[in-house]
Amino acid sequence: MDGKKISLKLEHISQSFITNNKVFDAAVDVSLEVYESEFLVILGPGRCGKTTLLNMIAGLEKPVDGQILLDGEELKGSDERIGMVFQKRALMPWKTVMENVEFGLKIKGMDKTERRKIAQKYIDLVGLTGFEKAYPDQLSGGMKQRVSIARAYSNDPHILLMDEPFGALDAQTRYAMEEELQRIWQTEKRTVIFVTNNIEEALYLADRIVLLTECPAHVKAVYEVNLPRPRDTVDPEFLRLRKEISDNTDLAL
Image (tube, rainbow, N blue to C red):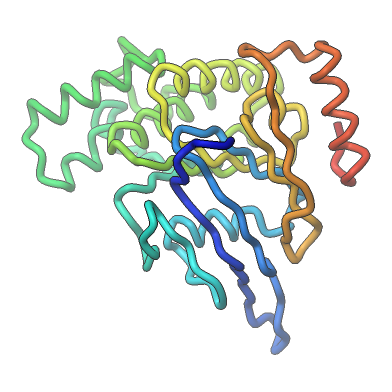
C-alpha cells in the first residue's frame, strides 16, 4: 500500500473490562494503519475482540491505553466522519425505508427536499428503488441490511465500519449481499473496515486482511489480497491464500 494516504491509525490500543471483580483483557497493544478508500477486513474467531476494536474506533468505548488518529488528529469520542453498520440492523420499525435512510440528515437539520434527494440516491444505489414507502417488517433480511448500508452512506462518512453485517443471513443471501457490497463500494468508494469470522468472506471482499489472535485481540498477521474483482473463489491464488490463513488460525473455512 506504498504511497497511499493513511486515513486511520491505531497506535498501541488496549482495552480491558472488570468482570466478576477480575480484569478481563479484550485487546492488547493493537497497532494498524488503514488507508484511504481501502476495504480492510478484520478477521478473527468469535469473541476475540473484533467488535471491541470497532467500538473504540466508533467512539463508543474509550481505550485504556494507546490512541486512535483520524486524518492525523486524535479521536476523542464519536465523530460524524465515521459511520457504522451493525449485524443487528437497528432500523426504526415505525419509519419507512426513506425515513430510515434520511434520518441522520434530518437530525443534522437538512431541509426535506435536499435530504430526500440524497436518501433517494443511496436507496437507488443499494437496489431498493420502489421500496421507499415500505416498513422494515415488510422487508427480507438482506433488504433490511441494504437499508442500513444506504443510511450509513447517506451521512457521507469518511470511514464506514461494518460489524459482521451479514452474519445473521442465510448462506445464499449472504453471498448475494457480498456481491452487492462490493458493487456499492466500487461505485462510491469509502474507507471500509469490515469485521468477520469467515475466511472466504474476508478474501472475497478485502484489499487487506488483518488476522487477530484469540482473546485478548492482538494482530497476528496481515495479508495483502491482490486479486482482481469480482473474485473467483476457485482461483488458485484465492485457494492458496485461504489455506494459508486457515493454517494460521482455528477459524473454519
